[in-house]
Amino acid sequence: MKADMNTKERLVVRRKEILDAARRVFEAHGYAATTMEAVAEGAGIAKGSIYNYFKNKHDLFRTVFIEGLPTNFADMTAEWTGQGSSPVEKIQRLLDLWYSRLQEHKRAGKLILEFWAAAAHDEQAELGELFGSVYSHVRGLIASVIDEGIAGGDFPPHVQSGVAASLILAVFDGMMLQALLDARITVDESFVAGLKRAVMAGLGKGC
Image 1 (cartoon, rainbow, N blue to C red):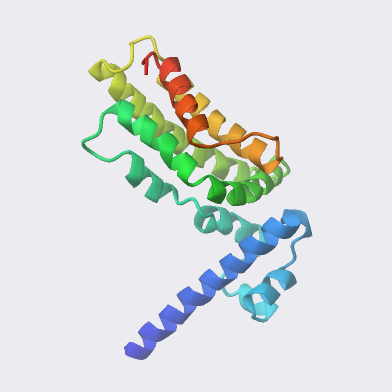
Image 2 (image 1 turned 120 degrees about the vertical axis):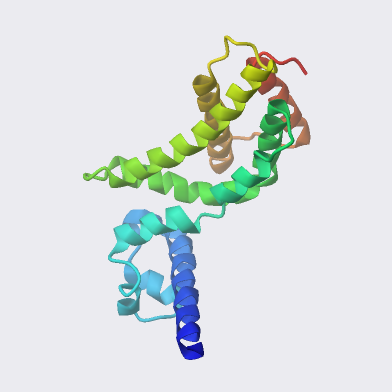
């Protein structure tokens, strides 16, 4: 039984090594130019071993997006939607969390851009549907917090939570894109403080 557990543990470790190598190769070379040979070399294994874990490059890339991106959506959710905080505090904490992970987001952003490009050319639309489901989930979480604020009087009733949540996500994507393209923008604590004021003003909450 112990031997079986050790085998399972080795399989889990090897799978993670493949995903880590794939993430590095996809980030460095892009989806189209990445080969399974390059991923195998990065993981220090034979190319054929990858197929014990993933069907093909498409499956590997899909799994990298789901499991391997540095930003773990479940962890982020736990960090900013905790109980005992007001909706205003939750939205502000989300902005703080985004800023605290900006460097990580910038690194992951290259992969997300690759994912966008791959999704746009995916004839079966599988990647696009996956990407859409992730955005829908996060947008729904933000909207639910805004709805909570509307119900409690923190935000005025005319605020459209779905629209506001989409705009907040657009701000995150836009800042990340500008950072990736080196758009000569300095995102520091002062910038984030101003961003908070702008978001709160958009939600009808003065700061």
